[in-house]
Length: 239
Ligand code: NAP
Image 1: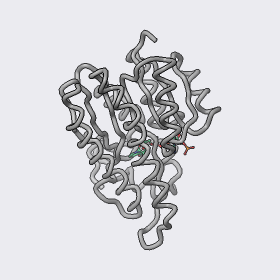
Image 2: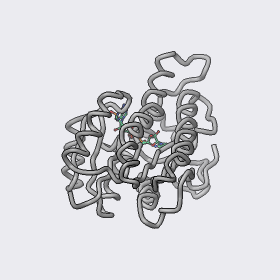
Image 3: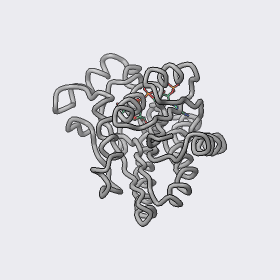
Image 4: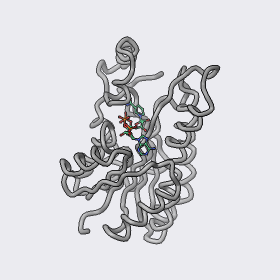
């Protein structure tokens, strides 16, 4: 593969799809990972110079297989974007153990799984970019104890990895989207959706491309001296 390879998880729709689209326009071959084979192949075909891998990011062994397969068949992974995420919102006093476990498994263990399997090869090459998608909710948000805890964990993971990997010229940064127009937020009740939009100082909901362009910056040469940072992309919103 002549182009550098960027792996994007949760890339069949929403923010992940926009990230893959923007990275593709910036010269990357994109590897899309998500749950639905059909949606993945539609997305990969639309992007061009792209492949889809059906994968649950919470499955340690499956991530190991896909990371090895990409490296062995396509080439070295230059950029890893851990974007796949879910929410299962409920007040803490009603939250089930399953709702807690699943969100932590996908939103926190998922990024760990991918980093665990990609970092050894990046260390050998002494190069790499890792961008983790956290959330403005990491600071605490009513009804999101599981999600906020997982997304706060992503920031701890990011900052630790940044320190461990800086000597290997690997940068690790996190992005905290605010309220972005995607299938995830469109599942909300219309009143709750409008109430969130009303809280955004710039006066509009974020687009997936607003987030994707910051990912592209962190993946670019312009960001080679930026590591361990948490960048809010929320139009000034404070939860
Ligand atoms: P989305 O529209 O729901 O897209 C997320 C994608 O990840 C979906 O295609 C989803 O598949 C996939 N996915 C879920 N579980 C997975 C798993 N175990 N393995 C692989 N893929 C999986 O969400 P989004 O709004 O684009 O969010 C992308 C990221 O941004 C998430 O990490 C989210 O927490 C974060 N974020 C979003 C917002 C926002 O306002 N939208 C704000 C802050 C942070 P299914 O649809 O089949 O579940």
